[in-house]
Length: 135
Image (cartoon, rainbow, N blue to C red; front, top):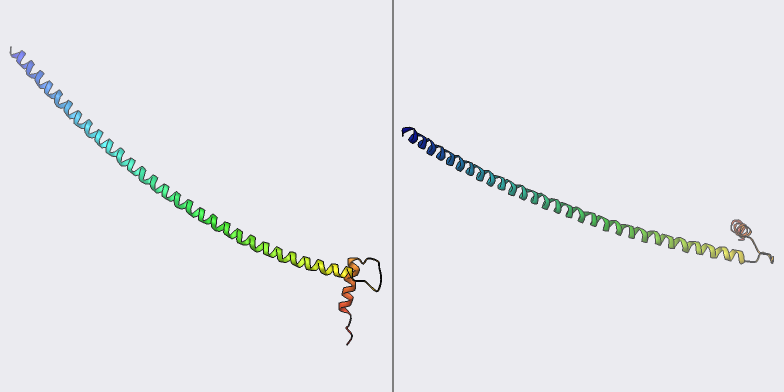
């Protein structure tokens, strides 16, 4: 009878111990789960913050690149306009020179009816310009 009572007492103690152990395990697991969830939420918030900062940096960089490209484009337009104006002035100069050459080639040379070559015309003009003028 006494052994049976001791066995029941031991069994009751073992069940209480098992219940306490289970409860302690559940509390520990709940705490670990909560800490893991908090850590995951913190990591997600940090990742979102980094992603937002990266996006803002990328947007700012894109804006700088676009502004730089627009500025370069305007510079190229301005330079092209300048080059085009210089080319127009050069063409006007060449046209004037061509007109002068045409005039030189069309002047009669002492009644000679043969066509004058460019070299002949330039030589004649050079002689005219370098000869002493009558005073």
